[in-house]
Length: 168
Picture 1 (tube, rainbow, N blue to C red):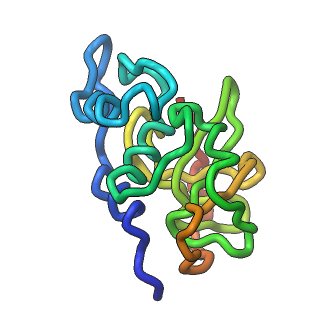
Picture 2 (cartoon, one colour):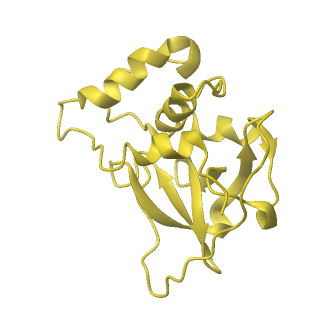
């Protein structure tokens, strides 16, 4: 089995990080935004109630020295970052970009079944979680430029598991 990419290990280390309820802000999420800054995020990020899936992905890459996409807070900006990956060539750690009502969503591939991808991402139910997201919503599959693609698709049995409907 191929070794897990460093950015995916960084993402797993953040599992369970949650938005603060109400008007409060989680200092961990706000710290990610402060460290990346407006040049990377493309905006002043001032509340964890602002969609933060792109911030999460950018943070994981930044921590291991890989340059994130410009305007990283925009999920759909990740659709042109790095190199494209064919669905049959996916490997754990690939970036998946999805359509959703009102925008997009971005996270990391960890596996799949016949109809959905298992995605490790931020702002999934207001937290860093693993969720099932329909394959038909996926608009891009990407891998960091200059990093050899390592690994292969991971099949996960998951019949009757609910699909995500909350990535905002």
